[in-house]
Amino acid sequence: MAARYPPAIYVVAPGGWNATGGICRMVDNFMTEWEQHERRPPLVLVDSYGSKGKGCMPAYFVSAFWCVLFNGLCGRIGLLHLHMAECGSVLRKGMLVWLARVLNVPAVVHVHAAEFVDFYAALPRVLQRLVSATLRSATRCIVLGTTYREYFINVVALDARRVEIVYNGVPDPEVQRPVPRQATCELLFAGALTERKGLQDLLAALASARLRQAAWHLAVAGNGDDAPFRNQSEMSGLADKVTFHGWMAPPKMHDLFAASDVLVLPSRNEGLPMVIVEAMASGLAVISTPVGSISDAVVDGVNGLLVPPKDVDALATALAKVIECPEVRRRMGREGRNLYLTKFMPSKANERLSEIFSSVHQ
Image (tube, rainbow, N blue to C red; front, top):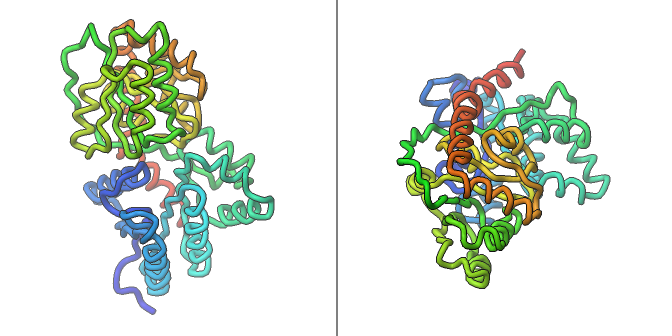
């Protein structure tokens, strides 16, 4: 059957345009820059999850499956770009990988999973082999950094020649930094309010004897139930130094980045959090943990500080360094901004993606 449209890259991702979450923001950034610069082939976004929660997800996935099947049979798909997390996402995108093989369409799997390592380790051996075989059948597998590349090669047994690194890119906010503050250090935690993100560890560190009376203020922004964390801050005597903002739309988040000095994200599991790249773009120093591919973005002692996950004492020590010395946090913020400009802009990510997409057809 002859195609009525030129083959395009069909991008299958959860939530479609303007949905919340790191994968959706990355896809928005990638597609916006691609279209603004009229890169080729053209992109077609296919929502595989919906933006209203798990209740509507099956209908969206069935629709996405049939969209790929129909357009693949019509010859409209030049390449399938599948954005994958962990758990059920592996099953859904895995089905599309096998469908792509049937349709003889190249499939590039883009892995964003923060908890893939734990997910994969918990699977029975037979399911591990199935996941490995599925990812090996993809034309390419894209990961977010060097740690994950080594993991997928050495543990999931993927061909090293097919595992590529593409760093998350965020638009340049072109933040005009305010006059440097000498007194209060403005800390920012931005992320889902879950145990995995480590907010409870951050509050415990700030409640330490050295930091309790220090000159700092913490802004907390993100989805989730903030009641346990409000209670923790109140019980620790920090209620007047912590502000909970809830979820914030991108324009408001830009304002919050501009008003902050340091992003603190003591996560226990991660891929490469978009919020860290956004903080670097805004000239903030970063305190985080060396999990996932965070070490590819945060160089310890240069543009931020890395501490072991769950280590409250080490986190308190790192916080003290940036709270007590304004010049340290400003220097790290400048270094982070420079690293962002050379490595994490959307144009850098899309140049790399374009190279990968082109190599698939060679």
